[in-house]
Image (cartoon, rainbow, N blue to C red):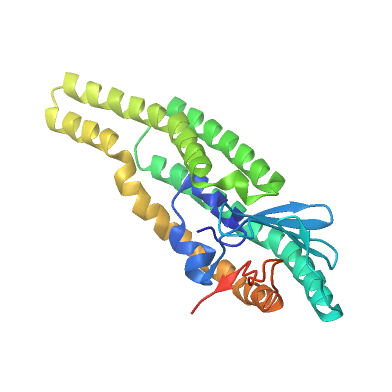
Length: 248
Protein backbone atom coordinates (compact mmCIF):
# COMPACT_ATOMS: atom_id res chain seq x y z
CA UNK A 1 0.00 0.00 0.00
CA UNK A 2 1.41 3.36 -1.01
CA UNK A 3 1.72 6.32 1.32
CA UNK A 4 -0.22 9.35 0.22
CA UNK A 5 2.24 11.46 -1.73
CA UNK A 6 4.72 8.64 -1.87
CA UNK A 7 7.31 10.99 -3.28
CA UNK A 8 8.51 10.92 0.32
CA UNK A 9 9.94 7.55 -0.62
CA UNK A 10 12.35 9.25 -2.98
CA UNK A 11 14.86 9.23 -0.18
CA UNK A 12 14.91 5.44 -0.51
CA UNK A 13 17.30 6.01 -3.36
CA UNK A 14 19.98 6.41 -0.70
CA UNK A 15 18.70 4.37 2.21
CA UNK A 16 15.79 2.67 3.93
CA UNK A 17 13.62 5.38 5.52
CA UNK A 18 10.51 3.28 6.08
CA UNK A 19 10.60 4.22 9.75
CA UNK A 20 10.29 7.85 8.72
CA UNK A 21 7.63 7.70 6.04
CA UNK A 22 4.16 9.15 6.21
CA UNK A 23 2.47 5.86 6.97
CA UNK A 24 4.57 5.32 10.09
CA UNK A 25 4.71 8.88 11.39
CA UNK A 26 1.32 10.26 10.31
CA UNK A 27 -0.47 6.89 10.00
CA UNK A 28 -1.56 8.04 6.53
CA UNK A 29 -1.96 5.53 3.73
CA UNK A 30 -3.55 5.28 0.33
CA UNK A 31 -4.13 2.41 -2.07
CA UNK A 32 -3.83 4.88 -4.96
CA UNK A 33 -0.94 6.29 -6.91
CA UNK A 34 -1.08 10.01 -7.46
CA UNK A 35 -0.22 12.00 -10.59
CA UNK A 36 -0.33 15.78 -10.72
CA UNK A 37 -1.34 17.38 -13.99
CA UNK A 38 -2.23 21.00 -14.80
CA UNK A 39 -5.72 21.62 -13.44
CA UNK A 40 -6.36 18.11 -12.16
CA UNK A 41 -5.25 15.29 -9.89
CA UNK A 42 -5.32 11.66 -11.03
CA UNK A 43 -5.51 8.80 -8.55
CA UNK A 44 -5.20 5.28 -9.91
CA UNK A 45 -4.87 1.72 -8.64
CA UNK A 46 -5.22 -1.80 -10.00
CA UNK A 47 -8.25 -2.76 -7.85
CA UNK A 48 -10.88 -2.49 -6.48
CA UNK A 49 -13.11 -0.08 -8.38
CA UNK A 50 -12.93 2.81 -8.72
CA UNK A 51 -9.51 2.30 -10.23
CA UNK A 52 -9.18 5.83 -11.64
CA UNK A 53 -10.30 9.01 -9.90
CA UNK A 54 -9.87 12.40 -11.56
CA UNK A 55 -10.38 15.58 -9.54
CA UNK A 56 -10.64 18.84 -11.46
CA UNK A 57 -11.77 22.32 -10.47
CA UNK A 58 -14.70 21.22 -8.36
CA UNK A 59 -15.39 18.21 -10.57
CA UNK A 60 -15.07 14.49 -9.97
CA UNK A 61 -14.82 11.56 -12.37
CA UNK A 62 -14.44 7.94 -11.35
CA UNK A 63 -13.69 5.25 -13.92
CA UNK A 64 -14.72 7.63 -16.69
CA UNK A 65 -18.08 8.55 -15.14
CA UNK A 66 -18.86 12.08 -13.97
CA UNK A 67 -20.08 12.12 -10.39
CA UNK A 68 -22.89 14.65 -9.64
CA UNK A 69 -21.86 17.00 -6.84
CA UNK A 70 -23.66 19.57 -4.78
CA UNK A 71 -22.07 22.95 -4.10
CA UNK A 72 -20.61 21.89 -0.76
CA UNK A 73 -18.88 18.88 -2.29
CA UNK A 74 -17.58 20.99 -5.17
CA UNK A 75 -16.08 23.44 -2.68
CA UNK A 76 -14.52 20.60 -0.72
CA UNK A 77 -12.88 19.19 -3.85
CA UNK A 78 -11.50 22.61 -4.76
CA UNK A 79 -9.96 22.86 -1.30
CA UNK A 80 -8.72 19.26 -1.46
CA UNK A 81 -6.87 19.89 -4.72
CA UNK A 82 -5.46 23.23 -3.56
CA UNK A 83 -4.23 21.90 -0.23
CA UNK A 84 -2.76 18.72 -1.68
CA UNK A 85 -0.80 20.72 -4.27
CA UNK A 86 0.47 22.98 -1.49
CA UNK A 87 1.63 19.91 0.40
CA UNK A 88 3.69 18.46 -2.44
CA UNK A 89 6.65 20.91 -2.22
CA UNK A 90 6.89 20.28 1.51
CA UNK A 91 7.00 16.52 1.00
CA UNK A 92 9.63 16.97 -1.69
CA UNK A 93 11.67 19.10 0.70
CA UNK A 94 11.76 16.19 3.15
CA UNK A 95 12.87 13.87 0.36
CA UNK A 96 15.55 16.31 -0.76
CA UNK A 97 16.91 16.54 2.75
CA UNK A 98 16.85 12.76 3.00
CA UNK A 99 18.99 12.56 -0.13
CA UNK A 100 21.49 15.03 1.34
CA UNK A 101 21.65 13.24 4.68
CA UNK A 102 22.16 9.88 3.02
CA UNK A 103 24.97 11.01 0.76
CA UNK A 104 26.59 12.95 3.60
CA UNK A 105 26.48 9.78 5.68
CA UNK A 106 28.27 7.86 2.93
CA UNK A 107 30.94 10.55 2.76
CA UNK A 108 31.40 10.56 6.53
CA UNK A 109 31.59 6.78 6.62
CA UNK A 110 34.35 6.90 4.00
CA UNK A 111 36.33 9.29 6.22
CA UNK A 112 36.73 6.48 8.75
CA UNK A 113 38.32 4.14 6.20
CA UNK A 114 41.70 5.91 5.82
CA UNK A 115 41.33 6.03 2.06
CA UNK A 116 44.10 7.48 -0.06
CA UNK A 117 43.74 11.01 -1.40
CA UNK A 118 42.97 9.93 -4.98
CA UNK A 119 40.19 7.56 -3.86
CA UNK A 120 38.70 10.24 -1.59
CA UNK A 121 38.66 12.71 -4.49
CA UNK A 122 36.98 10.19 -6.81
CA UNK A 123 34.43 9.30 -4.14
CA UNK A 124 33.58 12.95 -3.52
CA UNK A 125 33.15 13.54 -7.25
CA UNK A 126 30.80 10.58 -7.62
CA UNK A 127 28.76 11.55 -4.57
CA UNK A 128 28.32 15.07 -5.92
CA UNK A 129 27.16 13.69 -9.26
CA UNK A 130 24.68 11.35 -7.55
CA UNK A 131 23.35 14.24 -5.45
CA UNK A 132 22.76 16.43 -8.50
CA UNK A 133 20.93 13.65 -10.36
CA UNK A 134 18.74 12.66 -7.42
CA UNK A 135 17.81 16.24 -6.56
CA UNK A 136 16.83 16.87 -10.17
CA UNK A 137 14.65 13.77 -10.25
CA UNK A 138 12.93 14.69 -7.01
CA UNK A 139 12.23 18.21 -8.25
CA UNK A 140 10.88 17.04 -11.62
CA UNK A 141 8.73 14.17 -10.37
CA UNK A 142 4.98 14.68 -10.65
CA UNK A 143 3.82 11.13 -9.96
CA UNK A 144 4.30 8.45 -7.35
CA UNK A 145 4.60 6.03 -10.28
CA UNK A 146 8.13 7.44 -10.65
CA UNK A 147 9.11 5.99 -7.30
CA UNK A 148 7.72 2.51 -6.93
CA UNK A 149 9.81 0.05 -4.94
CA UNK A 150 11.74 -1.35 -7.89
CA UNK A 151 12.61 2.12 -9.14
CA UNK A 152 13.82 3.25 -5.72
CA UNK A 153 15.87 0.08 -5.39
CA UNK A 154 17.37 0.66 -8.82
CA UNK A 155 18.61 4.07 -7.74
CA UNK A 156 19.95 2.63 -4.49
CA UNK A 157 21.78 -0.03 -6.46
CA UNK A 158 23.12 2.58 -8.86
CA UNK A 159 24.56 4.62 -6.02
CA UNK A 160 26.06 1.52 -4.45
CA UNK A 161 27.33 0.31 -7.82
CA UNK A 162 29.09 3.61 -8.44
CA UNK A 163 30.69 3.87 -5.01
CA UNK A 164 31.20 0.43 -3.46
CA UNK A 165 33.74 -0.89 -5.99
CA UNK A 166 35.85 2.24 -5.55
CA UNK A 167 35.96 1.87 -1.76
CA UNK A 168 36.35 -1.91 -1.85
CA UNK A 169 39.25 -1.57 -4.28
CA UNK A 170 41.01 0.92 -2.02
CA UNK A 171 40.55 -1.34 1.00
CA UNK A 172 41.74 -4.29 -1.05
CA UNK A 173 44.92 -2.41 -1.90
CA UNK A 174 45.44 -1.64 1.78
CA UNK A 175 44.93 -5.31 2.61
CA UNK A 176 47.44 -6.34 -0.06
CA UNK A 177 50.00 -3.87 1.25
CA UNK A 178 49.49 -5.14 4.79
CA UNK A 179 49.89 -8.73 3.67
CA UNK A 180 53.08 -7.94 1.74
CA UNK A 181 54.51 -6.22 4.81
CA UNK A 182 53.77 -9.34 6.87
CA UNK A 183 50.81 -7.99 8.86
CA UNK A 184 48.40 -10.80 8.04
CA UNK A 185 45.97 -9.91 10.82
CA UNK A 186 45.56 -6.37 9.49
CA UNK A 187 45.17 -7.73 5.98
CA UNK A 188 42.37 -10.04 7.11
CA UNK A 189 40.68 -7.21 9.01
CA UNK A 190 40.71 -4.98 5.95
CA UNK A 191 39.35 -7.73 3.71
CA UNK A 192 36.51 -8.38 6.17
CA UNK A 193 35.79 -4.67 6.36
CA UNK A 194 35.55 -4.41 2.59
CA UNK A 195 33.26 -7.44 2.40
CA UNK A 196 30.92 -6.20 5.15
CA UNK A 197 30.98 -2.50 4.35
CA UNK A 198 27.22 -2.15 3.83
CA UNK A 199 26.04 -4.25 6.77
CA UNK A 200 26.97 -1.85 9.53
CA UNK A 201 26.22 1.24 7.50
CA UNK A 202 22.49 0.59 7.09
CA UNK A 203 21.51 0.92 10.77
CA UNK A 204 23.73 3.97 11.18
CA UNK A 205 22.05 5.59 8.19
CA UNK A 206 18.61 4.91 9.65
CA UNK A 207 19.70 6.57 12.87
CA UNK A 208 20.91 9.65 11.01
CA UNK A 209 17.59 9.92 9.20
CA UNK A 210 15.75 10.21 12.50
CA UNK A 211 16.30 13.97 12.21
CA UNK A 212 13.66 13.97 9.45
CA UNK A 213 10.93 12.97 11.89
CA UNK A 214 9.95 16.53 12.99
CA UNK A 215 9.63 17.63 9.36
CA UNK A 216 7.36 14.68 8.63
CA UNK A 217 5.34 15.22 11.79
CA UNK A 218 4.70 18.79 10.64
CA UNK A 219 2.91 17.36 7.59
CA UNK A 220 0.49 15.26 9.62
CA UNK A 221 -2.17 17.93 10.36
CA UNK A 222 -2.40 18.81 6.67
CA UNK A 223 -2.77 15.17 5.69
CA UNK A 224 -5.51 14.77 8.29
CA UNK A 225 -7.18 17.82 6.76
CA UNK A 226 -7.15 16.13 3.34
CA UNK A 227 -8.79 13.06 4.83
CA UNK A 228 -11.51 15.25 6.31
CA UNK A 229 -12.15 17.09 3.05
CA UNK A 230 -12.72 13.84 1.10
CA UNK A 231 -14.74 12.26 3.89
CA UNK A 232 -18.11 11.04 2.62
CA UNK A 233 -17.39 11.59 -1.08
CA UNK A 234 -18.46 8.64 -3.21
CA UNK A 235 -17.53 7.23 -6.59
CA UNK A 236 -20.01 6.65 -9.39
CA UNK A 237 -20.46 3.08 -8.13
CA UNK A 238 -21.49 4.36 -4.71
CA UNK A 239 -18.32 3.38 -2.89
CA UNK A 240 -16.56 5.86 -0.64
CA UNK A 241 -13.49 7.29 -2.35
CA UNK A 242 -11.08 6.93 0.56
CA UNK A 243 -8.27 8.50 -1.40
CA UNK A 244 -6.36 8.91 1.84
CA UNK A 245 -6.87 7.09 5.11
CA UNK A 246 -5.55 8.26 8.45
CA UNK A 247 -5.42 5.78 11.31
CA UNK A 248 -4.47 6.05 14.97
